Image (cartoon, rainbow, N blue to C red; front, side, top):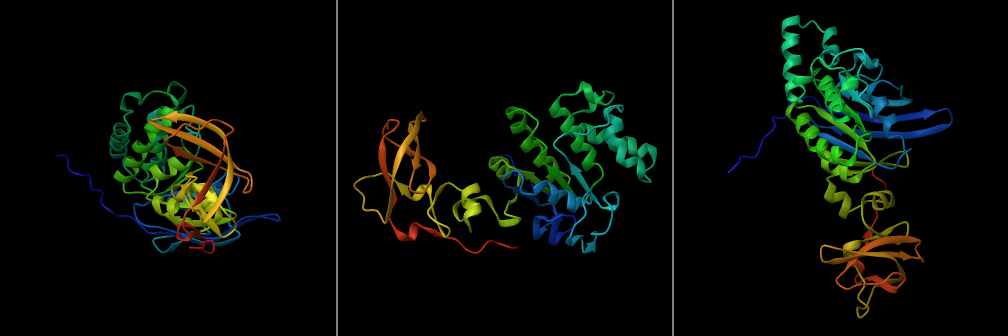
Length: 333
């Protein structure tokens, strides 16, 4: 029987303390706090345009902050420029230097260290092997595929052994199949190198695959942070419920998860709504039904053992009051 791989936990605790960013009169985010444990990967997920990428740039030092602190192992880095921080950022594009070979690109950061040439060459060779690109050492970026470029960018980042790796939607420019292949590979690579990381995405599935914990970023801050099951089944406010969970938002304070809803007419409901079938399709022995609830102005996808025709009018509801989720105040960790 194959033994489960165990990763050693080392590194420094990264602390983001009450970080705020204002651009002219627009407040992008306010008093965002976050603690990343050694070798932990935090996924930050949320709608586009909510300030997730700017948040990463503020941590990296590429953007100034209006208020707050960034610490690594207790050392305050807030006023340090990006090139003085032990952080590395990966963007949506690999940003490899086009005039350099792959080996030269991966080696670039080490040129500013005091590492002897012989040792540096050995380390670069080892990292190229780790990312399965050793046979492309003398190739130029234009000769590489999209996936190879991102693997090269990851090698260039990890070879510096940063305290924190910041990844800003690094797979967004890749096709779906390649993205799926790279996710697990990248996570395993980061874990093997014992590096802490923040991974930004707007893709919920990607956030769950990559992160040890997930932070939902909306309305100027982190609304909730926790393990995927916690956020999915126990959202603490409407932002988390609408973006990360599946169900019906009854009002500003109440939510019911899809697994607590039923379409059985004979049941006596605690709460119920009239719905209209917008679409339906058959998959794996079940009928999937998209239902629009006019009263709540929401759509929900449910499953049924029976075939339900498009435009059919049905009643859906929740059986017991205790099946409702009552929201807590937006989380400010």
